[in-house]
Image (cartoon, rainbow, N blue to C red; front, side):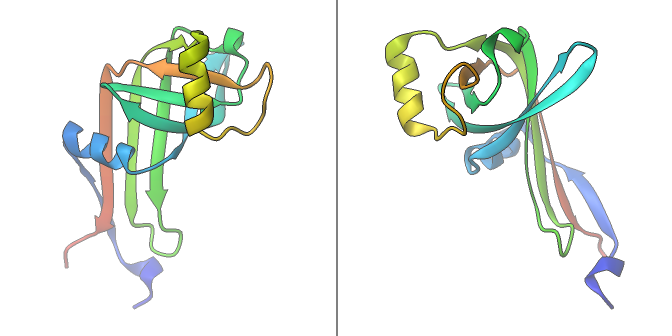
Length: 135
């Protein structure tokens, strides 16, 4: 039987496991509304002190006071993997010393006005594993 014909199931994971998966990854997507559209921007992130720090190529003025960050690892050939979504209030990191630290530790795509460092304070964390269904 080919792997594409194998039935899959989605299983919710605990918040602790979702954060563990998030911490083990480095790339995700910042999702937020802008002018009645949903905007997605790539992001590099780190989890520190109960907050998610994200470096993203988005103008800081465009990022609202709350946003969603999505991370996943899915194997294209099998469809197996996991997905984690974190949502909550966001603030832009403006302290020069703190910004310099994260600019050194989180690689960016652009420099200048569209290179923004954000701190997301999670209010909700959801995660799912995509696995093969039991026979």
